[in-house]
Image 1 (tube, rainbow, N blue to C red):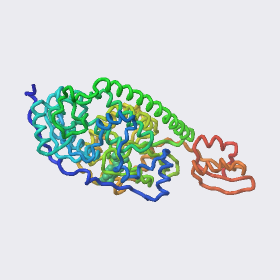
Image 2 (tube, rainbow, N blue to C red):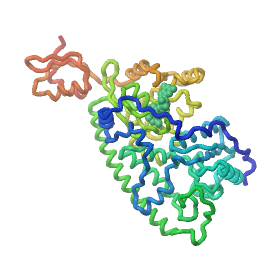
Image 3 (cartoon, rainbow, N blue to C red):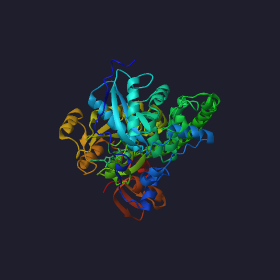
Image 4 (cartoon, protein in one colour):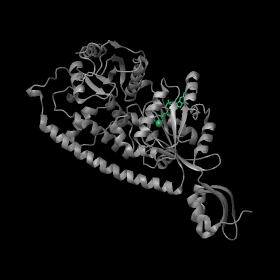
Length: 503
Ligand SMILES: Nc1nc2c(ncn2[C@@H]2O[C@H](COP(=O)(O)OP(=O)(O)OP(=O)(O)O)[C@@H](O)[C@H]2O)c(=O)[nH]1
Ligand SMILES: [Mg+2]
Protein backbone atom coordinates (compact mmCIF):
# COMPACT_ATOMS: atom_id res chain seq x y z
CA UNK A 1 0.00 0.00 0.00
CA UNK A 2 2.77 2.39 0.84
CA UNK A 3 6.04 1.15 -0.39
CA UNK A 4 8.00 2.99 -3.01
CA UNK A 5 7.78 6.43 -1.49
CA UNK A 6 8.16 5.59 2.14
CA UNK A 7 11.69 6.48 3.07
CA UNK A 8 10.89 6.56 6.73
CA UNK A 9 10.36 9.44 9.07
CA UNK A 10 12.91 12.11 9.46
CA UNK A 11 13.00 14.10 12.61
CA UNK A 12 14.05 17.65 12.00
CA UNK A 13 15.89 19.18 14.86
CA UNK A 14 14.45 22.07 16.79
CA UNK A 15 10.85 21.00 17.05
CA UNK A 16 10.85 19.84 20.58
CA UNK A 17 11.68 22.73 22.81
CA UNK A 18 9.71 25.81 23.42
CA UNK A 19 6.06 25.96 24.09
CA UNK A 20 3.62 28.51 25.34
CA UNK A 21 6.07 29.83 27.88
CA UNK A 22 8.76 31.22 25.65
CA UNK A 23 6.81 33.63 23.57
CA UNK A 24 7.90 37.17 23.60
CA UNK A 25 5.22 39.69 24.20
CA UNK A 26 5.78 43.39 24.03
CA UNK A 27 3.21 46.07 23.66
CA UNK A 28 4.98 49.12 22.35
CA UNK A 29 3.97 52.58 23.39
CA UNK A 30 2.08 54.09 26.28
CA UNK A 31 -0.35 51.75 27.83
CA UNK A 32 -2.34 54.28 29.81
CA UNK A 33 -6.08 54.49 29.50
CA UNK A 34 -5.99 57.53 27.23
CA UNK A 35 -3.77 55.77 24.79
CA UNK A 36 -6.08 52.80 24.82
CA UNK A 37 -9.09 54.94 24.12
CA UNK A 38 -7.26 56.80 21.43
CA UNK A 39 -6.14 53.59 19.81
CA UNK A 40 -9.67 52.27 19.90
CA UNK A 41 -11.13 55.37 18.35
CA UNK A 42 -8.52 55.82 15.69
CA UNK A 43 -8.86 52.17 14.76
CA UNK A 44 -12.45 52.86 13.91
CA UNK A 45 -13.82 49.93 15.87
CA UNK A 46 -14.67 49.80 19.52
CA UNK A 47 -11.88 47.35 20.14
CA UNK A 48 -9.13 48.03 22.57
CA UNK A 49 -7.99 44.61 21.69
CA UNK A 50 -4.62 45.15 20.16
CA UNK A 51 -3.18 46.05 23.51
CA UNK A 52 -4.91 43.60 25.75
CA UNK A 53 -2.39 40.87 25.49
CA UNK A 54 -2.92 39.23 28.86
CA UNK A 55 -6.61 39.28 28.30
CA UNK A 56 -6.25 37.64 24.96
CA UNK A 57 -4.38 34.67 26.31
CA UNK A 58 -7.03 34.16 28.94
CA UNK A 59 -9.82 34.23 26.40
CA UNK A 60 -11.84 31.24 25.55
CA UNK A 61 -13.64 31.09 22.28
CA UNK A 62 -17.38 31.09 22.61
CA UNK A 63 -19.13 29.50 19.70
CA UNK A 64 -22.33 31.42 20.31
CA UNK A 65 -24.60 28.75 18.95
CA UNK A 66 -27.44 26.90 20.61
CA UNK A 67 -26.68 24.59 23.49
CA UNK A 68 -26.69 21.43 21.46
CA UNK A 69 -24.66 22.82 18.65
CA UNK A 70 -22.16 24.39 21.01
CA UNK A 71 -21.21 20.83 21.81
CA UNK A 72 -20.37 20.10 18.23
CA UNK A 73 -18.19 23.12 17.63
CA UNK A 74 -16.60 22.95 21.04
CA UNK A 75 -15.43 19.47 20.33
CA UNK A 76 -14.26 20.24 16.85
CA UNK A 77 -12.56 23.49 17.69
CA UNK A 78 -11.55 23.03 21.27
CA UNK A 79 -8.73 25.50 21.76
CA UNK A 80 -5.43 23.75 21.29
CA UNK A 81 -3.83 25.61 24.16
CA UNK A 82 -1.87 23.56 26.62
CA UNK A 83 -2.32 20.46 24.58
CA UNK A 84 0.68 18.24 24.00
CA UNK A 85 1.11 17.75 20.32
CA UNK A 86 3.10 15.76 17.77
CA UNK A 87 3.52 17.33 14.33
CA UNK A 88 3.50 15.33 11.15
CA UNK A 89 4.21 16.54 7.63
CA UNK A 90 4.10 14.73 4.33
CA UNK A 91 6.88 16.00 2.13
CA UNK A 92 5.99 15.63 -1.53
CA UNK A 93 8.33 17.98 -3.37
CA UNK A 94 11.20 20.38 -2.79
CA UNK A 95 14.23 19.84 -0.60
CA UNK A 96 14.61 18.48 2.90
CA UNK A 97 15.20 22.09 3.97
CA UNK A 98 11.83 23.17 2.56
CA UNK A 99 10.18 20.33 4.44
CA UNK A 100 11.92 21.34 7.67
CA UNK A 101 10.99 25.00 7.20
CA UNK A 102 7.41 24.01 6.67
CA UNK A 103 7.37 21.97 9.86
CA UNK A 104 9.10 24.77 11.76
CA UNK A 105 6.29 27.06 10.68
CA UNK A 106 3.75 24.47 11.81
CA UNK A 107 5.50 24.42 15.18
CA UNK A 108 5.22 28.20 15.44
CA UNK A 109 1.56 28.00 14.54
CA UNK A 110 0.99 25.29 17.16
CA UNK A 111 2.79 27.30 19.82
CA UNK A 112 0.87 30.41 18.92
CA UNK A 113 -2.29 28.38 19.49
CA UNK A 114 -0.91 27.53 22.92
CA UNK A 115 0.19 23.95 22.33
CA UNK A 116 3.35 22.31 23.62
CA UNK A 117 5.22 20.65 20.76
CA UNK A 118 6.73 17.33 21.78
CA UNK A 119 7.93 15.98 18.47
CA UNK A 120 7.89 16.75 14.77
CA UNK A 121 8.26 14.20 12.02
CA UNK A 122 8.07 14.25 8.24
CA UNK A 123 7.52 11.52 5.74
CA UNK A 124 8.60 11.63 2.13
CA UNK A 125 5.87 10.38 -0.22
CA UNK A 126 4.75 11.04 -3.80
CA UNK A 127 1.47 12.29 -2.38
CA UNK A 128 -0.36 12.02 0.92
CA UNK A 129 -2.05 8.68 1.51
CA UNK A 130 -5.72 9.07 0.54
CA UNK A 131 -6.81 7.11 3.60
CA UNK A 132 -4.53 8.08 6.45
CA UNK A 133 -2.43 11.02 5.11
CA UNK A 134 0.85 9.27 6.04
CA UNK A 135 1.22 5.73 4.83
CA UNK A 136 -0.44 3.08 6.95
CA UNK A 137 2.86 1.71 8.26
CA UNK A 138 3.99 5.19 9.21
CA UNK A 139 0.67 5.82 10.90
CA UNK A 140 1.46 2.90 13.20
CA UNK A 141 4.88 4.38 13.92
CA UNK A 142 3.20 7.67 14.61
CA UNK A 143 0.99 5.96 17.18
CA UNK A 144 4.12 4.71 18.92
CA UNK A 145 5.54 8.22 19.04
CA UNK A 146 2.25 9.50 20.41
CA UNK A 147 2.28 6.84 23.10
CA UNK A 148 5.89 7.30 24.11
CA UNK A 149 5.66 11.08 24.31
CA UNK A 150 2.27 11.15 25.96
CA UNK A 151 0.83 13.46 23.31
CA UNK A 152 -2.89 14.06 23.17
CA UNK A 153 -3.10 15.56 19.69
CA UNK A 154 -1.52 15.08 16.27
CA UNK A 155 -1.31 18.06 13.94
CA UNK A 156 -0.92 17.39 10.21
CA UNK A 157 0.83 19.92 7.99
CA UNK A 158 -1.84 20.36 5.35
CA UNK A 159 -5.57 20.35 4.81
CA UNK A 160 -6.90 16.85 5.21
CA UNK A 161 -10.08 15.41 3.81
CA UNK A 162 -12.65 14.64 6.50
CA UNK A 163 -12.15 10.91 5.95
CA UNK A 164 -8.38 11.15 6.30
CA UNK A 165 -8.71 12.88 9.66
CA UNK A 166 -11.06 10.21 10.89
CA UNK A 167 -9.03 7.26 9.65
CA UNK A 168 -5.79 8.62 11.03
CA UNK A 169 -7.51 9.21 14.35
CA UNK A 170 -8.56 5.60 14.40
CA UNK A 171 -4.96 4.51 14.05
CA UNK A 172 -3.18 6.92 16.37
CA UNK A 173 -5.99 6.92 18.95
CA UNK A 174 -5.77 10.61 19.74
CA UNK A 175 -7.34 13.68 18.24
CA UNK A 176 -5.99 14.65 14.81
CA UNK A 177 -6.29 18.19 13.48
CA UNK A 178 -4.93 19.73 10.31
CA UNK A 179 -3.09 22.98 9.60
CA UNK A 180 -6.27 24.69 8.46
CA UNK A 181 -8.07 23.93 11.73
CA UNK A 182 -5.00 25.15 13.61
CA UNK A 183 -4.95 28.47 11.78
CA UNK A 184 -8.70 28.87 12.30
CA UNK A 185 -8.16 28.20 15.99
CA UNK A 186 -5.51 30.92 16.25
CA UNK A 187 -7.75 33.37 14.47
CA UNK A 188 -10.58 32.46 16.83
CA UNK A 189 -8.35 33.12 19.83
CA UNK A 190 -7.09 36.43 18.46
CA UNK A 191 -10.22 37.98 16.98
CA UNK A 192 -11.38 40.91 19.06
CA UNK A 193 -13.62 43.18 17.04
CA UNK A 194 -17.20 42.22 16.29
CA UNK A 195 -16.39 41.98 12.62
CA UNK A 196 -13.26 39.90 13.17
CA UNK A 197 -15.14 37.45 15.36
CA UNK A 198 -17.95 37.10 12.85
CA UNK A 199 -15.45 36.55 10.03
CA UNK A 200 -13.64 33.83 11.94
CA UNK A 201 -16.82 32.13 12.98
CA UNK A 202 -18.04 32.04 9.40
CA UNK A 203 -14.74 30.53 8.29
CA UNK A 204 -14.90 27.92 11.06
CA UNK A 205 -18.43 26.89 10.21
CA UNK A 206 -17.51 26.62 6.53
CA UNK A 207 -14.70 24.30 7.52
CA UNK A 208 -16.86 22.37 9.94
CA UNK A 209 -19.86 21.73 7.71
CA UNK A 210 -18.43 18.95 5.54
CA UNK A 211 -16.74 17.45 8.60
CA UNK A 212 -19.80 16.86 10.72
CA UNK A 213 -19.97 13.26 11.80
CA UNK A 214 -22.28 11.19 13.89
CA UNK A 215 -21.49 10.96 17.55
CA UNK A 216 -19.68 7.87 18.60
CA UNK A 217 -17.76 6.96 15.50
CA UNK A 218 -14.79 9.10 16.20
CA UNK A 219 -12.60 9.89 19.14
CA UNK A 220 -12.77 13.63 18.67
CA UNK A 221 -16.51 13.40 19.12
CA UNK A 222 -16.04 12.05 22.60
CA UNK A 223 -14.21 15.11 23.71
CA UNK A 224 -11.30 12.98 24.75
CA UNK A 225 -8.25 12.61 22.71
CA UNK A 226 -6.84 10.18 25.23
CA UNK A 227 -9.61 7.62 25.07
CA UNK A 228 -9.20 4.32 23.30
CA UNK A 229 -11.62 2.02 21.55
CA UNK A 230 -14.18 4.14 19.84
CA UNK A 231 -15.20 1.82 17.08
CA UNK A 232 -18.84 2.59 17.25
CA UNK A 233 -21.25 -0.25 17.85
CA UNK A 234 -24.91 0.11 18.50
CA UNK A 235 -24.72 1.55 21.97
CA UNK A 236 -22.00 4.02 21.07
CA UNK A 237 -23.36 5.39 17.87
CA UNK A 238 -25.36 8.11 19.55
CA UNK A 239 -28.02 10.20 17.93
CA UNK A 240 -26.52 9.57 14.48
CA UNK A 241 -27.97 10.92 11.26
CA UNK A 242 -30.88 12.81 12.71
CA UNK A 243 -28.56 14.78 14.89
CA UNK A 244 -26.23 15.50 12.00
CA UNK A 245 -29.10 16.74 9.90
CA UNK A 246 -30.28 19.06 12.65
CA UNK A 247 -26.76 20.35 13.20
CA UNK A 248 -26.26 20.91 9.52
CA UNK A 249 -29.46 22.91 9.27
CA UNK A 250 -28.55 25.04 12.25
CA UNK A 251 -25.07 25.67 10.94
CA UNK A 252 -26.48 26.78 7.61
CA UNK A 253 -28.88 29.14 9.34
CA UNK A 254 -26.09 30.53 11.49
CA UNK A 255 -23.86 31.02 8.45
CA UNK A 256 -26.58 32.90 6.59
CA UNK A 257 -27.01 35.17 9.61
CA UNK A 258 -23.27 35.82 9.85
CA UNK A 259 -23.10 36.66 6.15
CA UNK A 260 -25.90 39.19 6.58
CA UNK A 261 -24.18 40.77 9.57
CA UNK A 262 -20.86 40.93 7.77
CA UNK A 263 -22.46 42.53 4.72
CA UNK A 264 -23.86 45.26 6.96
CA UNK A 265 -20.52 45.84 8.64
CA UNK A 266 -18.68 46.07 5.37
CA UNK A 267 -21.19 48.66 4.13
CA UNK A 268 -20.39 50.77 7.17
CA UNK A 269 -16.74 50.43 6.35
CA UNK A 270 -17.23 51.37 2.72
CA UNK A 271 -18.87 54.57 3.89
CA UNK A 272 -15.88 55.33 6.06
CA UNK A 273 -13.56 54.54 3.22
CA UNK A 274 -15.53 56.75 0.85
CA UNK A 275 -15.20 59.58 3.29
CA UNK A 276 -11.48 59.10 3.21
CA UNK A 277 -11.59 58.96 -0.56
CA UNK A 278 -13.47 62.22 -0.89
CA UNK A 279 -10.92 63.84 1.36
CA UNK A 280 -8.35 62.53 -1.07
CA UNK A 281 -5.94 61.42 1.57
CA UNK A 282 -3.93 58.62 0.02
CA UNK A 283 -4.08 55.27 1.77
CA UNK A 284 -0.96 53.22 2.37
CA UNK A 285 -1.45 49.60 3.45
CA UNK A 286 1.17 47.64 5.32
CA UNK A 287 0.85 44.02 4.26
CA UNK A 288 3.00 40.93 4.31
CA UNK A 289 3.66 37.55 5.79
CA UNK A 290 2.67 36.98 9.38
CA UNK A 291 5.38 37.92 11.90
CA UNK A 292 7.29 39.97 9.29
CA UNK A 293 7.18 43.02 11.56
CA UNK A 294 4.24 44.94 10.09
CA UNK A 295 2.94 46.19 13.42
CA UNK A 296 6.46 47.06 14.56
CA UNK A 297 6.87 49.11 11.42
CA UNK A 298 3.58 50.92 11.96
CA UNK A 299 4.69 51.71 15.51
CA UNK A 300 8.08 52.89 14.30
CA UNK A 301 6.54 55.12 11.64
CA UNK A 302 3.67 56.61 13.63
CA UNK A 303 4.20 55.86 17.31
CA UNK A 304 0.98 53.85 17.34
CA UNK A 305 0.94 51.48 20.31
CA UNK A 306 -0.04 48.43 18.31
CA UNK A 307 0.58 45.00 19.77
CA UNK A 308 3.81 43.41 18.66
CA UNK A 309 4.31 39.79 19.46
CA UNK A 310 6.60 37.02 18.37
CA UNK A 311 3.61 34.91 17.48
CA UNK A 312 1.80 34.32 14.25
CA UNK A 313 -1.32 36.32 13.50
CA UNK A 314 -0.89 38.73 16.39
CA UNK A 315 -2.84 41.30 14.39
CA UNK A 316 -6.27 40.48 13.03
CA UNK A 317 -8.15 43.73 13.20
CA UNK A 318 -6.98 46.46 10.90
CA UNK A 319 -5.59 49.59 12.55
CA UNK A 320 -5.49 52.86 10.66
CA UNK A 321 -3.26 55.77 11.61
CA UNK A 322 -2.86 59.25 10.23
CA UNK A 323 0.62 60.06 9.03
CA UNK A 324 2.42 62.79 7.13
CA UNK A 325 5.28 62.91 4.69
CA UNK A 326 8.23 65.09 5.75
CA UNK A 327 6.90 67.81 3.44
CA UNK A 328 3.58 67.69 5.26
CA UNK A 329 1.25 65.71 3.00
CA UNK A 330 -1.27 63.66 4.91
CA UNK A 331 -1.89 59.98 4.26
CA UNK A 332 -3.30 57.04 6.17
CA UNK A 333 -1.20 54.08 7.13
CA UNK A 334 -2.93 50.83 7.98
CA UNK A 335 -1.73 47.62 9.56
CA UNK A 336 -3.60 44.47 8.76
CA UNK A 337 -3.80 40.74 9.16
CA UNK A 338 -0.71 38.86 8.05
CA UNK A 339 -0.65 36.25 5.34
CA UNK A 340 0.65 32.72 5.45
CA UNK A 341 1.44 30.03 2.93
CA UNK A 342 -1.77 28.25 1.94
CA UNK A 343 -3.93 30.67 3.85
CA UNK A 344 -7.11 28.65 4.32
CA UNK A 345 -9.50 29.67 1.58
CA UNK A 346 -12.34 29.80 4.11
CA UNK A 347 -10.41 32.59 5.81
CA UNK A 348 -9.63 34.47 2.62
CA UNK A 349 -13.33 34.36 1.82
CA UNK A 350 -14.42 35.41 5.29
CA UNK A 351 -11.81 38.16 5.53
CA UNK A 352 -12.39 39.33 1.99
CA UNK A 353 -13.75 42.72 2.97
CA UNK A 354 -10.81 43.34 5.31
CA UNK A 355 -8.36 42.21 2.67
CA UNK A 356 -10.02 44.37 0.06
CA UNK A 357 -8.80 47.40 1.98
CA UNK A 358 -5.35 46.36 0.85
CA UNK A 359 -6.58 46.09 -2.73
CA UNK A 360 -8.15 49.51 -2.38
CA UNK A 361 -5.06 51.31 -1.16
CA UNK A 362 -2.85 53.66 -3.17
CA UNK A 363 0.37 52.00 -2.12
CA UNK A 364 1.25 48.69 -0.47
CA UNK A 365 4.24 48.45 1.82
CA UNK A 366 4.99 44.79 1.39
CA UNK A 367 6.98 43.87 4.49
CA UNK A 368 9.27 40.85 4.23
CA UNK A 369 11.21 39.30 7.11
CA UNK A 370 14.72 39.23 5.67
CA UNK A 371 15.97 37.15 8.61
CA UNK A 372 13.55 34.31 7.82
CA UNK A 373 15.09 31.10 6.44
CA UNK A 374 13.17 31.48 3.19
CA UNK A 375 12.14 35.10 2.53
CA UNK A 376 11.59 34.50 -1.17
CA UNK A 377 8.96 31.88 -0.53
CA UNK A 378 7.17 34.29 1.80
CA UNK A 379 7.31 36.98 -0.84
CA UNK A 380 5.75 34.64 -3.39
CA UNK A 381 3.06 33.44 -0.97
CA UNK A 382 2.04 37.01 -0.20
CA UNK A 383 1.88 37.96 -3.85
CA UNK A 384 -0.39 34.99 -4.42
CA UNK A 385 -2.83 36.41 -1.86
CA UNK A 386 -2.52 39.86 -3.48
CA UNK A 387 -3.63 38.33 -6.76
CA UNK A 388 -6.45 36.50 -5.02
CA UNK A 389 -7.87 39.70 -3.54
CA UNK A 390 -7.36 41.84 -6.63
CA UNK A 391 -4.44 43.85 -5.24
CA UNK A 392 -1.91 42.88 -7.88
CA UNK A 393 -2.12 46.25 -9.64
CA UNK A 394 -1.59 48.43 -6.58
CA UNK A 395 1.93 49.93 -6.55
CA UNK A 396 4.06 47.84 -4.21
CA UNK A 397 7.06 48.97 -2.23
CA UNK A 398 9.02 46.01 -0.90
CA UNK A 399 10.41 46.54 2.58
CA UNK A 400 13.01 44.05 3.77
CA UNK A 401 12.64 44.24 7.53
CA UNK A 402 14.77 42.78 10.35
CA UNK A 403 17.91 43.82 8.47
CA UNK A 404 19.63 43.81 11.88
CA UNK A 405 19.10 40.07 12.19
CA UNK A 406 19.41 39.08 8.53
CA UNK A 407 22.32 37.27 6.94
CA UNK A 408 24.24 39.84 4.84
CA UNK A 409 24.60 37.31 2.03
CA UNK A 410 20.84 36.75 1.91
CA UNK A 411 20.26 40.51 2.00
CA UNK A 412 22.53 40.90 -0.98
CA UNK A 413 20.62 38.25 -2.93
CA UNK A 414 17.32 39.89 -2.07
CA UNK A 415 18.65 43.28 -3.14
CA UNK A 416 19.57 41.88 -6.55
CA UNK A 417 16.18 40.26 -6.92
CA UNK A 418 14.14 43.28 -5.83
CA UNK A 419 16.19 46.33 -6.79
CA UNK A 420 13.50 48.84 -5.81
CA UNK A 421 13.24 47.53 -2.27
CA UNK A 422 14.13 49.36 0.94
CA UNK A 423 16.00 47.68 3.79
CA UNK A 424 15.02 48.58 7.30
CA UNK A 425 15.02 47.44 10.87
CA UNK A 426 11.86 48.35 12.70
CA UNK A 427 13.75 47.35 15.84
CA UNK A 428 16.83 49.58 15.54
CA UNK A 429 15.34 52.24 13.27
CA UNK A 430 17.97 51.68 10.61
CA UNK A 431 16.77 52.57 7.13
CA UNK A 432 13.53 54.12 8.37
CA UNK A 433 14.46 57.55 7.00
CA UNK A 434 15.01 55.96 3.57
CA UNK A 435 11.67 54.24 3.84
CA UNK A 436 9.89 57.48 4.67
CA UNK A 437 11.58 59.06 1.67
CA UNK A 438 10.51 56.21 -0.59
CA UNK A 439 6.93 56.40 0.64
CA UNK A 440 6.73 60.16 0.06
CA UNK A 441 8.16 59.68 -3.39
CA UNK A 442 5.63 57.00 -4.25
CA UNK A 443 2.55 58.77 -2.91
CA UNK A 444 0.34 60.53 -5.39
CA UNK A 445 0.78 64.30 -5.25
CA UNK A 446 -2.70 65.37 -4.43
CA UNK A 447 -2.23 68.58 -2.48
CA UNK A 448 -2.31 72.15 -3.70
CA UNK A 449 -0.67 75.20 -2.22
CA UNK A 450 -3.26 77.94 -1.51
CA UNK A 451 -3.51 81.44 -0.07
CA UNK A 452 -6.98 82.33 1.12
CA UNK A 453 -8.83 84.73 3.40
CA UNK A 454 -11.73 82.82 4.92
CA UNK A 455 -14.52 84.93 6.42
CA UNK A 456 -15.11 84.39 10.11
CA UNK A 457 -18.50 82.74 9.63
CA UNK A 458 -16.76 79.90 7.74
CA UNK A 459 -14.85 78.59 10.74
CA UNK A 460 -15.70 75.10 9.49
CA UNK A 461 -13.39 75.56 6.51
CA UNK A 462 -10.58 76.87 8.69
CA UNK A 463 -10.87 73.79 10.91
CA UNK A 464 -10.75 71.54 7.87
CA UNK A 465 -7.58 73.21 6.65
CA UNK A 466 -6.08 72.56 10.08
CA UNK A 467 -7.23 69.00 10.06
CA UNK A 468 -6.49 67.93 6.51
CA UNK A 469 -3.90 70.36 5.24
CA UNK A 470 -0.55 71.69 6.27
CA UNK A 471 -0.47 75.31 7.42
CA UNK A 472 2.43 77.45 6.28
CA UNK A 473 1.07 80.74 7.66
CA UNK A 474 -2.02 81.96 9.52
CA UNK A 475 -3.13 85.47 10.43
CA UNK A 476 -6.33 87.06 11.69
CA UNK A 477 -7.25 90.03 9.51
CA UNK A 478 -10.21 92.40 9.36
CA UNK A 479 -11.80 90.28 6.59
CA UNK A 480 -11.27 86.85 8.10
CA UNK A 481 -8.59 84.22 8.67
CA UNK A 482 -5.73 84.52 6.21
CA UNK A 483 -4.25 81.12 5.50
CA UNK A 484 -1.30 79.94 3.47
CA UNK A 485 -1.45 76.15 3.31
CA UNK A 486 -1.11 72.93 1.38
CA UNK A 487 -4.53 71.31 1.12
CA UNK A 488 -6.05 68.23 -0.56
CA UNK A 489 -7.69 68.88 -3.95
CA UNK A 490 -11.25 68.54 -2.75
CA UNK A 491 -10.80 71.09 -0.01
CA UNK A 492 -8.93 73.31 -2.46
CA UNK A 493 -12.10 73.41 -4.55
CA UNK A 494 -14.13 74.59 -1.60
CA UNK A 495 -11.56 77.28 -0.76
CA UNK A 496 -11.33 78.56 -4.31
CA UNK A 497 -13.81 81.41 -3.83
CA UNK A 498 -11.71 82.82 -0.96
CA UNK A 499 -8.40 82.66 -2.79
CA UNK A 500 -6.16 85.71 -2.78
CA UNK A 501 -3.02 86.45 -4.84
CA UNK A 502 0.35 85.64 -3.31
CA UNK A 503 2.27 88.35 -1.49
N1 LIG B 1 15.36 41.53 14.98
C1 LIG B 1 14.26 42.19 14.61
N2 LIG B 1 13.07 41.77 15.05
C2 LIG B 1 11.96 42.45 14.66
C3 LIG B 1 12.06 43.59 13.80
N3 LIG B 1 10.79 44.04 13.57
C4 LIG B 1 9.96 43.22 14.27
N4 LIG B 1 10.66 42.27 14.93
C5 LIG B 1 10.12 41.21 15.79
O1 LIG B 1 9.32 40.34 14.99
C6 LIG B 1 8.20 39.85 15.74
C7 LIG B 1 6.90 40.14 15.00
O2 LIG B 1 6.67 41.53 14.94
P1 LIG B 1 5.22 42.14 14.64
O3 LIG B 1 5.40 43.59 14.40
O4 LIG B 1 4.23 41.70 15.66
O5 LIG B 1 4.90 41.40 13.26
P2 LIG B 1 3.56 41.44 12.40
O6 LIG B 1 4.00 41.38 10.97
O7 LIG B 1 2.70 42.57 12.80
O8 LIG B 1 2.93 40.04 12.81
P3 LIG B 1 1.38 39.55 12.78
O9 LIG B 1 0.51 40.67 13.20
O10 LIG B 1 1.41 38.42 13.75
O11 LIG B 1 1.13 39.08 11.37
C8 LIG B 1 8.29 40.54 17.10
O12 LIG B 1 8.91 39.65 17.99
C9 LIG B 1 9.16 41.75 16.83
O13 LIG B 1 9.85 42.18 17.99
C10 LIG B 1 13.36 44.01 13.36
O14 LIG B 1 13.55 44.98 12.62
N5 LIG B 1 14.41 43.26 13.80
MG1 LIG C 1 0.86 42.60 13.59
